[in-house]
Amino acid sequence: MDGNGRWANRRGLTRNEGHQRGVENVEKIVEKAGQLGIRYLTLYAFSAENWKRPQSEVDALMKLLKSFLKKQQKHLLENEIRLHTIGRVEELPHSVFRQLKIVKEATKHFAKNHLILALNYGARNEIIDAVKRYTEAFQSGAENLGDLHWGILSQYLDTSELPDPQLVIRTSGEHRISNFLLLQSAYAEYVFSPVCWPDFSPDLLETAIEDYRNRERRFGKTGEQVRQEQDVSLKSTAQ
Ligand code: IPE
Ligand code: MG
Image (cartoon, rainbow, N blue to C red; front, side, top):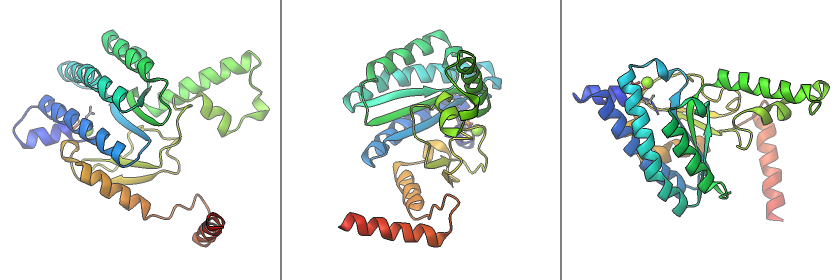
């Protein structure tokens, strides 16, 4: 969700006002995602690198996050959406961490729809934490190095309970990944939108998804193989 600061600067507003508008947009996009039947929506809200920003901006972001959580609690409960987090959330200000815990606990029995907030998240930190957890399990005899494959190691990532993202959208015209779900998005499709986050409307989300649906995902195979498999599966569903 990039471009809050630039969106605000272009309008003679403060960066924090841009973040405020960004949060309002999150609320709209969460709603639209539900309407579109997106079962897993991950929002990269605060990266492990974002602590380097001026303290006043970090403080404002944390305050916004807390009020967003308070407001969203009702929406999540009413719409039966489970809240997850990825990232080192225990390093967030205690009041934010506590609020996250409350909402996660209150929604943990919902299985269908999921909202995932990436907070103090960085893919490199995540892999380090996963390797540490795996090593502990290995040392206790619960894992065997000879059996290690991606399916096993991925169970130690923050996303162990979540499917890989199919589509990653980055707004504001930047063409980089910035340490977001590097391993999980190995086969994701990307959409880079020139629009800054506060203006990334529900209609633009829908357009991005249409774009995604029109792509041929080959997962290393040839286009011919993929189309043949689609024909076979279409025939078997028709039978
Ligand atoms: C994204 O907007 C919001 C967060 C990282 C929290 P930015 O704050 O990165 O906006 P720009 O990139 O400065 O425009
Ligand atoms: Mg940015």
